Length: 255
Image (cartoon, rainbow, N blue to C red):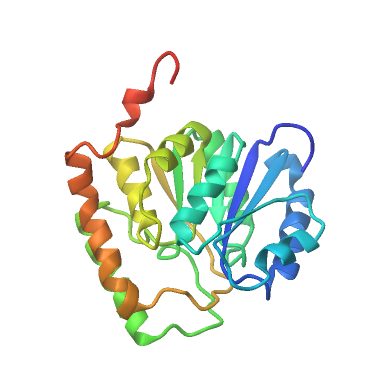
């Protein structure tokens, strides 16, 4: 929020956010101002994932010093986060939903683990933290989430029980690598990021987060469940066929 190069970049993917951004963005900036002695200079990047409403206009109308980018068409949360990370310039980069579903103190804790503890990736986990949902999720979605988490946690990214938690942080070089390699545009993008992190032996910290509010998800089990599972199953195939460049290959002069 100053001319100083940012220590922290916050990337906010957003779809149909016109109804709440005038509330959540001022709250976020107020928190950042109050905690600048801890977070350091910060940058906020909001990416509108081709919303059919006035999401981008509402974000700009706040008059706050944030960067607003609008994708011309709806591509999915993974594509929105990836674009935001390409625009981010902070030494540490965190993405979270623009409706701010988590208590904001988690930002400070993530920075601690990324900077002073030198973890490469910090992944939020609702499974380990408290929940206070204002909306009851449909039974079909709850069961689908449980089954998906069980499958992914056992077969793809062993030990991570909540791959879909909507807040994750990265060191800058790790973010450049992961989002430079990432291919998945929609809901399985979190799994792809963690899969690549583990395949490259990056240090991943799981951090409990407290959910304050969860608005309705755009994910529909009937429509998105099978494509999401197929995307996950493609990850090891793509890796073993050389579809991803290992992180170590980028090290050295000119990397």
